[in-house]
Image (cartoon, rainbow, N blue to C red; front, side, top):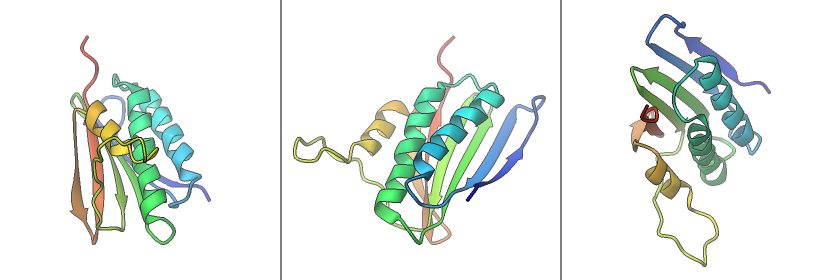
Length: 141
């Protein structure tokens, strides 16, 4: 199943956005990473593409691991001025938790990475589910 992609904007406009629907399955984790890397390349975004891809991988993995099967999964990307905002929307109202690091739990560090790498992040209610988002600024020149 191919994701649906809507892309708005062109190279002469200072803002661009895209919305991508993906199935909430394990295959969507590498697909979302690839899509983010490719869109940021095409848009010639000055942001750290690897950081953006890593963080979107964590957010999509959370949906696959904790929400799964019956939920919707939508990836939203927007560049406006210097900010890059990436969000993952799903049908669960359960908010992500930044967990303390623990040797007993080898997993559960994704939101800690989001908190450490993103310039800003958060979660908002969205149509009975939630939108978890992060924002990145371009590296200082």
